[in-house]
Amino acid sequence: MSAPDIFLSYSREDRAVAQRVSQGLEREGFSVWWDAELHSGETFDEMIEHNLRRSKAVIVLWSPRSVGSRWVRAEATQGDRRKKLLPAVIESCELPIAFELHHTSDLSKWDGNLSNPDWLGLVTDIRRLIGFKVGEDAGATHTPLSGHRPAPDMAAHEARPDDQTQFFTEVGAPIEESEVHVLELADGDQRVRKHVVGPLGLKIGRAAPSDLILSDPRVSRTHCLVEIKNDELEVSDLNSTNGTYVDNERVEKTMRIPVGSELRVGKSRLIHELRSRADLQA
Image (tube, rainbow, N blue to C red; front, side, top):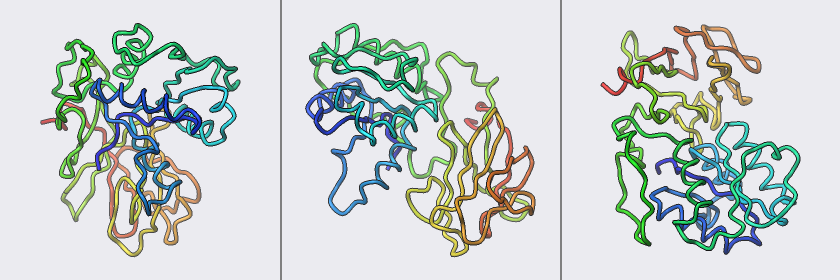
């Protein structure tokens, strides 16, 4: 499944409002994941964590019920930590102190009208955060849809399974001047596949919900997490059985991966390189 544009966090008591918000966002052309998408047999907490990490924006609906929810607070904290949080108030309430300084949209009087200024402000914030995929017209203007959900735009919203370089750029950013951190899977002297490390990081393991799945019995189910911190790449070992290595040195907890260094997970070798977005697109 492709990564959702938006993860929607809310209190169960506010389900009707959450459904209205989700439908409005879908009518604006976004893909939305919320726990109504859970299916029988799926592990509740794993699916939530999986989609929370993969989403490009986290919208938290604050209300007197949600501010008291440990689940909602945890999801808001994860979104904030990954710089993807877009909170919105749906009913007057006292916000958790950790989130009082965040710009918060006011949807307390929103009735589903896509022309409402408060709603349009939230939509603008979402588009600014998510950015445009390379190749999309960054100068295009957004027009609210009139109750019709558009046909899926595979280029703009879906990541095809064979896409090896998936990345986004901020609106108006010069593509050729922007560099991204890439882990290049090596086979001997050949670089056979590229994996871009985005703002949400890259979880590596043997099975879902890992982002990069390596079919190797020496790789743990959730093996390690690669993240960007202070514009540098760091890897954290997730208590793997056989260890994570950077240039043949075992990662005890967290270790920096310098450009040109080799990250080894099981039998796989991943080389850290910086690549321009223009080169990747080409």
